[in-house]
Image (cartoon, rainbow, N blue to C red):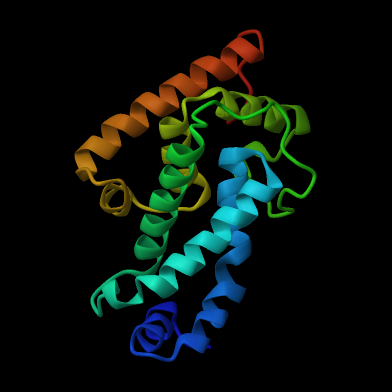
Length: 185
C-alpha cells in the first residue's frame, strides 16, 4: 500500500480518485476524533466528510515536504472551528457519547476498569473545548507537540504549557468526580 504522503501527492497532481484510498484509511479515525469532541454522530459524520471535501478542494496546498497527518488534522481543526462558528455551539459535550462510538481501544492506562474510563470520559467532556482538543490530539491521536503547534498555530513551547494546564484541569475534574480517590491513569 502506498504511503499517505505519496497518495496525497498523486491527488494533488490530479489523480483525485486516489482520495478514496485516504478516505478508506482515515475516515473512521477522523470520525472518532470528532465524536470524542462533539458526542454527536451526525455532526461527526458531517465534519469527517467536510475534511475530505476540503482535502480535495485545497489539494494544491499540499506540499511535497509536508507531513500528511499534520496537514489532515490542520484541515480537521479548521473545519471544526468553522462549524462551531457557524452554529455558535461552544458548549461542552453531553455526558453520554452516542452509541456508535468507536470500538477502538482507549489508551492502555485507562482500560483496566470500566468505571475509571467512565470517570475519565466525564472529566474530559467537562473540559473547555480547546483544552479537550489538545488532549485528544496528543493522547488519543498521538500527534507530537510540534505538530500540534503547526495545526493550531502556536509554538511547541506554547503547546507544552497549554497541555500542562489542560492535564492539570483534567486531573482536578477527575478527582472531583471520583471523590478524591486516586485511580490509575
